[in-house]
Every structure is written in structure tokens, then in C-alpha cells.
Amino acid sequence: MKIALTICEDLWDDQPTEAAFARNSLYTLSPMQKLAALKPDFMVNIAASPFSYHQENVRKQVVCKKAASYKVPVAYVNQVGANTELIFDGGSMMVNSEGNITHKVPAFSEGWVDLETDEVDQETTNALEATDPIKLIHDGLILGVRDYFHKSGLKKAVIGLSGGIDSAVTAAVAAKALSPENVHGVLLPSQYSSGHSVTDAEQLAENLGIETDTVAIKDIYQSVEKAMSPVFGDRQPDVTEENIQARIRGLLLMAYSNKFGHILLNTSNKSEAAVGYGTLYGDMNGGLSVLGDVYKTDVFKLARYLNKEGEMVPENTIVKPPSAELRPDQKDSDSLPDYDVLDKVLFRYIEWNLSPQSIIGEGFDEEVVRKAVRLVNFNEYKRFQTPPILRVSGKAFGVGRRMPLVAKYDKL
Image (cartoon, rainbow, N blue to C red):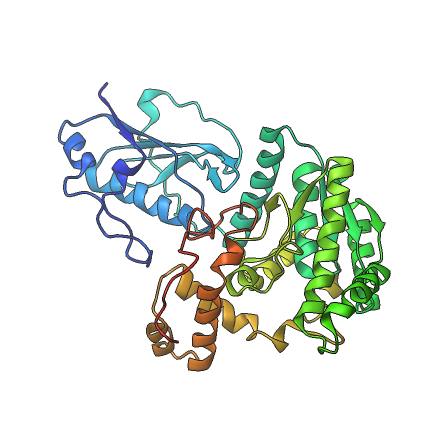
């Protein structure tokens, strides 16, 4: 039999137009076209195609289209495993000469299918079904956390539990990836922490089966405030005092990490990282950022997905308004547009690389767009100092989107 061998991008000489971020053509000469002219019995494509939640469905379309266009069966064999920022989801498949998937290996785990060579072009009517993006993000994060620890020879994680949605989802993902006995939560309530923040965190820990410690920071904060009073003088409290609280928490979590050898998991999401809604050396600490490529609106969807087979994330954590709780009655919406709007703007600016004018032209409020873009541009210096991020989208911060720390942007 004639077997044609292609490597990864050899199949991608064109891409579906619905992938707004994709180029229509990669090569002036198509490798598949040249190989198809030799009339192979089937084609093997060995690939190391990085995971993103939109890529899986686009990849299916590309492989199926190529098999049908050239009337040749294609065995698509993709790498699986996570390497910190870069995750490979596997998802290998056999596609017949009509462009239909006849066999598929489950994604995010090693596996195989045995096929006789005369079975590679089986007939099938299997439809090309799209996979739920939230399921893909969930599975990608589980693999990312698990391989980060196992490949590094690490075992245990520590997480600061605030009672909020981000720390809750991070803890749930870690418990599934590492098993509950390898995840430890630390509650760090302040004078501004609401009662439900503590009870929600405790309920989360009970749901997940993880152990916790509680270290109140009120006295520590007041001692820092007293020590700095001769320097600050009569200046009014501002964001400085909020950041002190976040940095006290970061200090205590790193102390726990050092003493017990647990790796601190960062809980910041992509929306916060984009606009700089986080404190360097405080809540931005950690060895790995689990949700750094997941927008806030998708974090809520992840919580619902995690609860499909029983409550992991407490219901009150999901439904209450997001808050950093660094001052009385604080809410995220005091400083930021509603996440439902903000995330749509950020997605267009970051993933699609659209200009502010183009985003405004789609009907988004001009003031909201310009504020969001200003914040993204200004806060690159913070993202430069964040932990490595598990990439689940087409454009993650870090190696996926490296920008100058100092740049002269047009006035917005």
C-alpha cells in the first residue's frame, strides 16, 4: 500500500473562514496536493497541534475537508499532554475519503484504535458534532494542572480561599486534577470580609473534601498601618491600603508554600489580568495561573459545569456579586464595566486584535471600549510578572501575547 506521511501544518494550507483569527492560506504550494497526485491508499498526519477551546472543532473541519477534497482517508494522530503554558489535547481520529470521522480517540488522555489497513476507508454517516467549549476548557485545565505537578515531581497545592468564584473554581479544578488530599485551602479573612465569604469557603472545602486553615489578617494589617503612619502622615486611605491587604495574604500564602512544600495556585482570571484588576506580590502570586486564560463570564459557566453531577462550588458563591472585599461594600462593578460587556470587548481586542474603532463600530459603548483598551495597554507590566498561564484560548497572555512593557499608544 502507498502511505503518505504529512506533518501537522501540512494539512493546514487553508482554514475555515469562521475562524476569524485564522489566515486563509499558509502555503503557496499545498503539500497535500502534491502527495494526493501520487494516489496514496491513505494518509497519516502526525501532529503537535496545541489546544484551544475553539481549535478542536476547527481542526475537525480542516481534516475532514482535506480528506473529502482529495478523496483519500486520513489518520490524524495528535500529541496529548500539557507542558505548562502549552497543552496538547490529542483527539486523534480516522477520517474516510468522504470526509466523515469513522474512529476517534477520546481527547485529553492517551489512547489508541487498532485498524486493519483495509478498514481505513470505512463508510459512516457520523455527523461532525461540535463539543461544548466549557467542557473543553474544563478538560484542558484538568490536564494542565495534573501534568504541571506530575512532570515537575510535585504533589500538593495550596490555594487562598476567599469565598469568591475564582478561588472556588480553581480549588475544584485542583481537587479533580490532584485528588482532594493533595489540595489545601487557607482562609484569610479581614475586617472587610463578609460572613458569607467565610461560610462559602468552608462549604466549598466540605464539598471538595479538602482540608483548610484560617489565618485572620486584621491584626497584621493594623500593625502595618501603624508602622507606616509616621510616613503616610495625614494622607487619606486609598488603593494603597487595599493593596496592603492583598500583599499580606500573598505573604502568608507563600509562607505556607515554603514551610510545607505546597505549590501556590494563582486564582486570577483573564478579565482581571487584562485590565490590571489585581495586586502585584499579592493576589497575583503563585507558581501556576489556572484561570489566567479564562474570562470571568466563562469562570461562572465553569462553576455550573463543575456542579453538573453534584454541588462542588456553593450556589451562593455563583450568584453573589463579585467583590475583592478590600473596602466596605466593595463590588467589582464599582471599578469595571459589567463582565458580560467587558469580556466581549476584551475578546475582540485581545483574541481578534480588532481596533477600538472597529469594536465601537459593532455597537459597543465608546467610553467602555476606550477605557478597557487603555487598561489592557497600561497593565502589560503586571502581566509580565505573573505566573505561567495554562493556555486554553487562541491568544493567552504570556508567550501567546507578548507586548512591549513601554510603548507609545495612540491616545484613547
